[in-house]
Amino acid sequence: MNNELIFEDNNELKVYKEVCSLIRLKQEGDYWDFKKQWYVKRNDKGHDKDHVMHLLIDIICMANNLVNRDTYIIIGVDEENDFSIHDISEDKNRLNTQKIVDILKDKPFAGGRRPVVTVEPICIHGITIDVIVIHNSMNTPFYLSKDFLGIKAANIYTRIQNTNTPIDRTADDQYVEYLWKKRFGLLLSPLEKVEYYLQRKDCWEQSPVYDNVKYYRYAPEYTIQYSYDDPEERNGYEYYLLNQVDARPSWTVIEIKYHQTVLKNFDAVFLDGGRHFSPVPEMDGISFNEYGSWDFSYRYWVRESFSYIVHVFYFDRNNYEARIAEERFLENVLIFESEEEHKSFNKYVTCRWKKDSKRIAPQVRKPFVPDISGYNMDVFKKEIQNTEILQYMLSEFRTLTEEI
Image 1: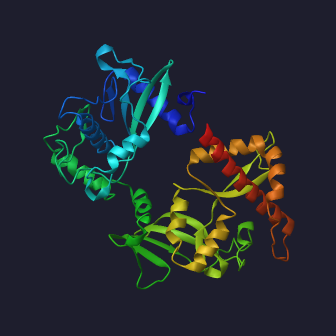
Image 2: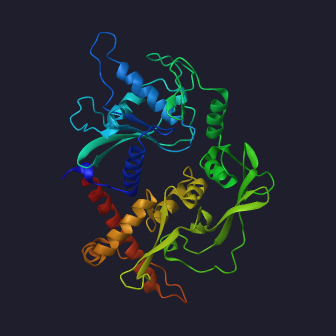
Image 3: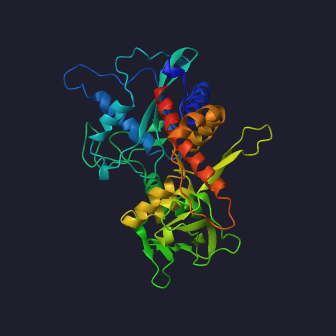
């Protein structure tokens, strides 16, 4: 099977569609560049590293783009021949993701910050081309701390329309200012800023007045807080609480504020008698009927989601009791690497549940749950067992995806 024809996720399909559209434009732009072939390794004495220099400067310019997005170096497009595609499957200079990572890892990038780069092979009308994807990052500007093969230390290189900054120059002041503002989150909306700030957990301070309030050290108008009062409309048990040592529910609400404006709020729960604290996971379900109503539901997070970022923010991994509570909690919560994986897994489960759940069920432990007055405990047991089966299926789904 030709792996170059397989789209393992929606991101690869997105790259394919976008690259096809860019080729049809028959011009280069501020986030894409065309090469007929891979960077040539010259054999002349003293020039055998030129290809590394050209590759490196192109990646730095693309990583320091001014359009705040992923960028592409598209290899296998001949500009001088009406932008026709040129097969590079036998190109002896061809590199994959790992080889480019190896090239970047020992270069003297300032602060150790390096662009994240992947190589995506795609096939167009039976012809293989490669796309070097330079992933968007807030770590701009990327620059070197020492001279390397003509690339000057501390020079900021970027790309304006279809032209890179010359190797012996640095970008104009307004472009350098933009890239630094991007690093410090100054180009973001208040909601985008606080999402970024929450990932810098060490930069948050405890309020000297309220022990349930924290503020961002460098922008104290951004705060995160929770209430000590249980929401009146929520006071019951849910299945993911029942394997905690102390399963009693204690609900609250998290509010994220800019000055006095609430930017985001989440239902939240104190776990194991307050030893751990977290937003409530998202809910989704599996449907086998024509009406689309769920036959059963489960709790989950996507790693890149705002809710999961807040979950990580409040998790104290230095607290042993919190770590135990977290481990028990996540036994009943599915964690997806991306929204694309989440959607693909739902389809996978819908097709395979009836067969795979019977095979996996004997491996799943029978959960012990306390007898709680007023609740049908068999429903809780079934929810816990379904989630454990889904955890098995998610592991198998990922193994299958890696093998394709």
